[in-house]
Length: 283
Image (cartoon, rainbow, N blue to C red):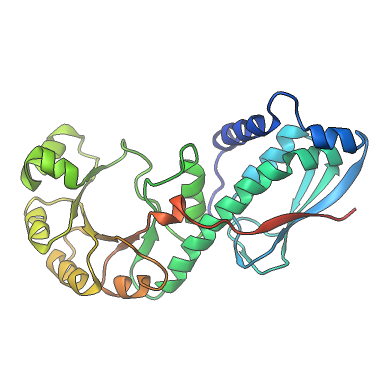
């Protein structure tokens, strides 16, 4: 499925801030001293390892903010699977502008492609089950929209975008409220009818109580596959079931086979390894 790109108004502020951080107070001293102003060149963004590409709009915006005349010819759009040596895009134009924007463009592209690739790894591991992999709010500050977009590109789905679009009652909420019931009842009384309520549980006893309160979803925290199967049977379709806790490609299949709806994976955004992509000079 093709994932719609993020609107430019959401992309540009992050890229602009990153370029300003890099340019500092005096601009690109190295490139401006070495490269003639009139020199043009052609370069290629090339994958060094297998993965899934994501974040091309961020890379393109970096080049175009530095020099609007730089042309980018995309060979493999976001969502494409990559093999080592694949050309992702050709970048042509003023050599100074290309070199000045290079690091910022690659920082975004490598990171977001890493998020998409990690997500694809989990999605492939659980193919054939009913489960979907989803991300969390454990995103890098300032990059939430970008990282959640990369998760979708990699075949995953998104959990909450922030504190304001759904209720997720966790252990500390329950402890401070004095129990599961008062926490859920206060949440239901405090939000509108369109806001869904999810409750985190780590025992089957908590789950049983949650089901009497008719929550919309249950976050089954750190449960093994056997307990997850019991939990799914207890829920019996009355709520969305979401598993979380130390889920990786090697553990995901057994967790997905338990019958849960979602596998919630925080490291996809906070700890995913970058995908190695380089910018190669072609003349």
